[in-house]
Length: 307
Image (cartoon, rainbow, N blue to C red; front, side, top):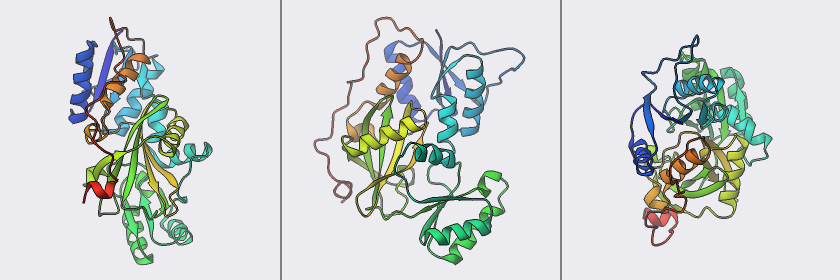
């Protein structure tokens, strides 16, 4: 059976995954989604399993939907990518499963969006339904700011930017949490701490180890199952009462800052899952699910870690 690694560009994460595949002796080919052309009149794809690592939501979604219609096994599955790649669809799936969420509204005109923001109360957060790395996420503290952001979004060319996804601003304690779920197990988690209200590591947030036991792991697993499961990263925030709320589920997550931080071999666990949940047959394969890098000496709070 043949494996394809679907990529847009080779980042640190993909290099780590390639090293794991090579170390296990997995036969695979790297497929550049920018060079891929799928023929609908004949199935010109010679792979049985696809491990998706493309950074393009659109390319990934259409590629996986096409390949699954041909009987190709995809990790993550196309329906998972479709749900996680759209914040509104993610919210619907999480709410249906009873996952704790911030108060959220969906609106389709600047006027209805402004009314929704004022009902939620200031400050509020306006997010694009499709996007990543904290881009085009805007905090609005008053009506003037809200009107300016909404007017700007209404003039953008993409119809997706004119779907207004609005959430209450959670007064998180200078950090949020990213939990990694592989299959039926939350394998590790990190705090992401920043002086800025956006705490993504892509925007300068600092990572420190977060225990994945207890509520963090339980809610992360509940969220992962709600969107269809697979290899996922669940982003959570703590509100002023200490409750955990889910704000996002990521289907092609970054993890470079989380391996040394947690002591968990995240790419190893990901490759384990791909092998175990496909029809690949690796001679003398043994799971590396317990493989770890040296763990941190302690698990300081995020604030202590950046002091």
